[in-house]
Figure 1 (cartoon, helix red, strand yellow):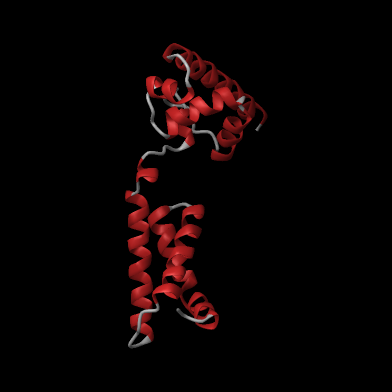
Figure 2: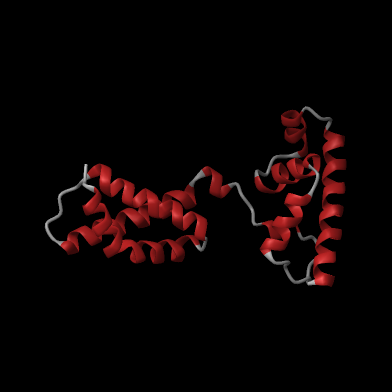
Length: 161
């Protein structure tokens, strides 16, 4: 295992490179931070021997790229959708991500849960019914009401923003 000084030196030398590579691949700050931690954790725990600083930098870059690819192929990443996919009217400008997120978070939990499971986890209404122990038709009703609440909330933001 590497010392704290070695880890700090590597972060100072290669941290910006790792973050840039992550942003190019992931286009997401939160995922970039996760991969950044993963890369330097591997650096500390694996403690590979390097022949030169170029070899060390190449190893860090390779680990970063592989970690980004692994995340992009992961089950979680492949089963999530951006919040603006909730928008149903073609031709409308997409609402700001933070506005949509705030609107979803402001929903009562019975709507928020159904919206999340349907749009982000891509469960069917029948599957959601089993998970939440609700009738399939109840799930459809909650989805429709949740969408209406979201739409009206986002229209208010659009008018006021």
